[in-house]
Image 1 (cartoon, rainbow, N blue to C red):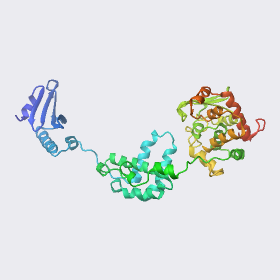
Image 2: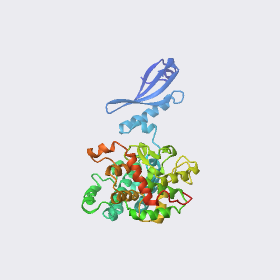
Image 3: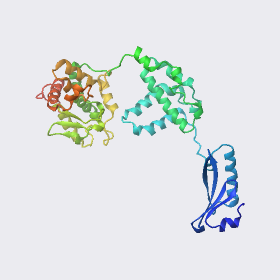
Image 4: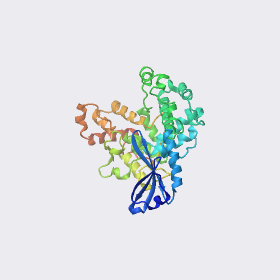
Length: 400
């Protein structure tokens, strides 16, 4: 039977049907009275609260139930009728990309990723689809972006495609593009039928690209030039060269990692590529750079001049190097160290590989790698420093 206004206000605890899926629920000795709409979806009972009787009258509850029952018959979700999702305003691909980078950058280990994303999108993507909304972007647009660079700059092109796909997936998740329209930058079962296979291109036509390295014979000259640059980025780069570590390992170094007595720098596993702690014997020139940086009083040894609470950026170090050697990479310094070890020293392979914190290649080498080989590596790093800046008795510039 249909409810009456009197029943609504006087009914005892229980559940009372008014028909068409509308129910009155009474709880707590009559002190709590509210409306519920019930329906079945895929054979399972579902219900939706419509509000208390003090806010929603019997007539209003019946009208709501009528609208919701109509939505059920139309195959719609009643919850979206009662609580519609906020309308998302269309964004251009450029704006959507900026939001994506801002949302995802906290999870990227390397701060340079955000810059790389923005740079490649600015160069290759925005000129074609930057001002289009996601619903207007087609496979043709994606091919217009990728075709000119797919064979010539495969690694860049592959990253560009992946980045477009990720941003378009965000558009679909935010309902800026219908899911049924698909992702125009998806590779599987889509672009794989329209572009050459990256694996085959790499195997057949793309030689392995190594980091551009400076011949070790020219490093002493570079070190002399760097010592004439009184800047944190220069000291950091010198330290990278002297210790043969990766740029990020040096840039993010903190004072607590330095053992002054033993003259050892211990890089924690969390900052190592192989996720194993790495000990670096420090030569006298490397220690002199550390003493020079002590005056700054910052947590990071090589702190950003503009943001002292943060480590110096990768780009700052790269720019310092490129002002002196435009065609060389910071990582290439490790290659120069490796070449020098092979050509100019009698150091064992295990000492060299451990100095570079490389992963063990086979079980035989693993037996040697159980030791840090600190003393052998200390000799090697002192020889390297002498090769770069001269004997320890030779004074360096006062700024160092």
